[in-house]
Length: 173
Image 1 (cartoon, rainbow, N blue to C red):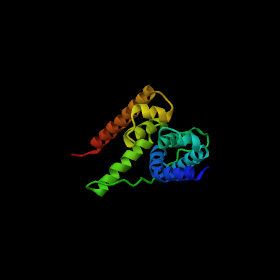
Image 2 (image 1 turned 30 degrees about the vertical axis):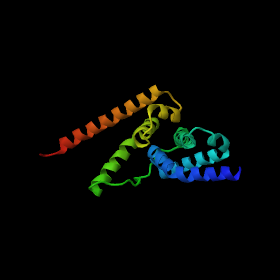
Image 3 (image 1 turned 90 degrees about the vertical axis):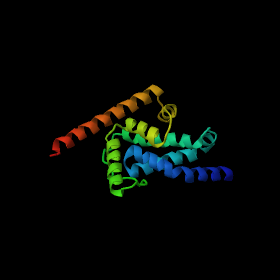
Image 4 (image 1 turned 60 degrees about the vertical axis):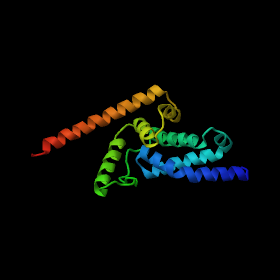
């Protein structure tokens, strides 16, 4: 690799690492797996730098590689469903305690979804990608993205309603 290519790769690595880690963590729910996915994607990007650097959006290309890595791990038979209890740091609002509870509930709800559904929601609402961009990242059609998002949101709404009913049943007032 030429020096200019090394410098370009180093710049991409430095700027993309934090965002890719947060993204893969949000999808996997496990910091170790997220870090492994990002490292693997960046290593593959380095090995094929001429192709990556000539892409229209190199960071988007590497993002797709990282998402494929984290989702691919789940397809392997040795993958276990254990998850870290750690919640990633995010800026809090007025009440730090309530924000922590809300954030933990969101991560728990996302973690309960199927991997592709979780990936679609994270890419849509956390990365702010369009349906077409999500389809490109996941290697599927826009229709699949729409149906995965719809199914995921329906599942989350149903679970929220069930929890609200349980709380209402327990409330003595």
